[in-house]
Image 1 (cartoon, one colour):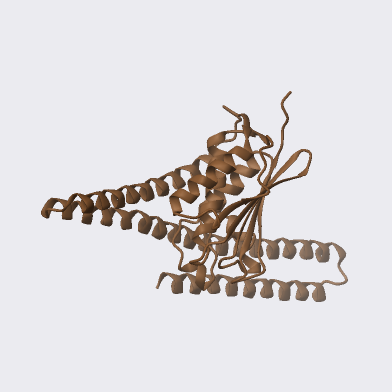
Image 2 (cartoon, one colour):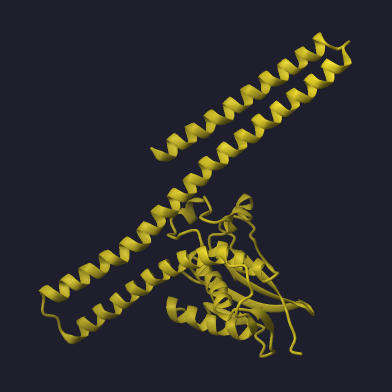
Length: 301
């Protein structure tokens, strides 16, 4: 119902704006016809109608954007609610079972492991929301140091494999080098950037994971990280939008994947704050995708 009502509201404001613009243009033309011999009234009328038309167009665009932004906020709240509610319900079920039944030691250990996984999921969701707020507000270079980005990527790859139970073939570092690749920044933020890319690749991959990670230095002062997966892919029209806060791709396959719509927003925000950028490439749905992050490289004095 909400989606339907918002779609109707969007269509209404677009139609209303188009009608008002058409009416303004018609009045403008009429004014020109009636006053074509009077230079001053003619010029003033054209300028005035031009401002009115521009104002109506800008107002309509603003209203439509606000409607879509509210829709994204609602989708974000629904996603976060689900991401929090599911592990909480699971934890409650395990605790009630442990309280009401006598279980053998093996079963109890299995329950404990599952409960720890649920708490990790809860913590991950909370950290994602907090980090998204933090990267928007933080603008200073406090506590920035020289960080070996190559080491951060290698350690993050091991963390991702452990977290998602992946083999070395499912998530692999290609052209891995022990060369020191220094970035001036905060190591925790850089690790968050890399882990978000890995988590995104895992979530949108098929059952059989095939994720390739590569670090290059395309220029002497640039470090490039690419994360390629052979998963659901991204429609051409979504490639720029997926980095917006709360935005999630609208294809049928991606809608089935749960998430908050904050991971890629954090990736680009951190990269740009460090003087770099992030972008994505994909041949389309079902064709896999590749995410790129470029950061400025520094050298030891």
